Image 1 (cartoon, one colour):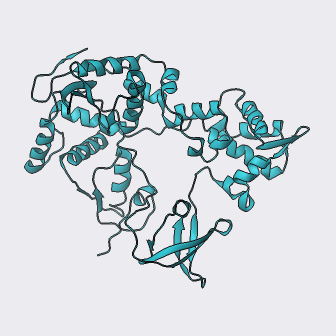
Image 2: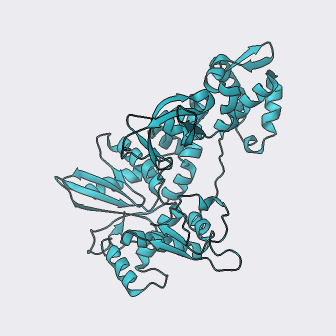
Image 3: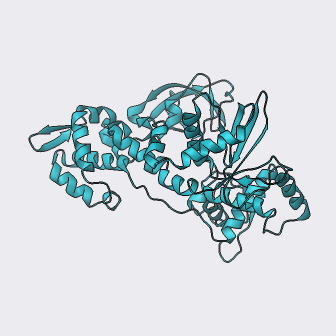
Length: 420
């Protein structure tokens, strides 16, 4: 029988006909992802069927958390961008190029008609236009604005095709031999990051000898054995807060609500045995011996993205030399102190909890402007605001983290501690 192997392709709603079963490697990162993938099967009057290939007990725990959440209709909310300044710049450029020259009033009227831009703070457009004019992205002749040299240099190639989308990268290059035979297509980001050696395409090994960006074309010749370096355009954002909080509820309950087979229940019990007794809500901190000093562990159940923010803030408050590792569920402070490591982490997290959102943002490193396709055209203040609101999601982070009780507990196998 036929088999289709893919990453997120099926999740995107591409209908390829009848699927008997969806096989998931590991746990889905979100409840919505699980529902989308399971929904690819069970078409035309049949029940959906999904199987999981799990590597260890933690995969099993995460899968039970995902399925429990789905059964209780707990799904990740859709959060639209509140400060889409990247889109705002793109629309300013498109409108200017479309008319070849335009006025401030026409620009503001056009931008105000776009639903996604109607809730921006007052004077946003005026501040942006002033910045674009100062940076030579726009030039003015009286009341008329026209594309400037900086705008043409960054976005004007191939008849302004870079203005068609706010997605950076993307696109494909045709790979042809010197004789003009089409070999296949390469991701534009792979072409831009090419290094030494050969690569595999269409079941054969090739070496890239020349690229023509103006025509999205690369010339390749037969190469030696392809190297082991893989090019992957995806990323690992970690598990969603909904899944992480479901894991906490399972651990606090001491069991899953799903009807597992005895073998799976035994595996799950083994994973839970390595965790202290915890509450269904809150952060739990304990300490264990490290290599030289005591390590501190904080089970947050916030998500990888939130724990990344929290680890950065903790290092800024406690000192840049402080080492902090994080994953989806926890923070780990190795060799923190000879004694009182847990108390020190509790104090740090308490300090973060009382910080206003703007002070939290000040502790975080600003992403490079190139993170966004039109970031180089934005003023620094709007870049930071966009990062705080739509990249770091600080408002949602504050809502999840700042009201959580924090418990200092004993290491696994000892009785639960008290809230501090």
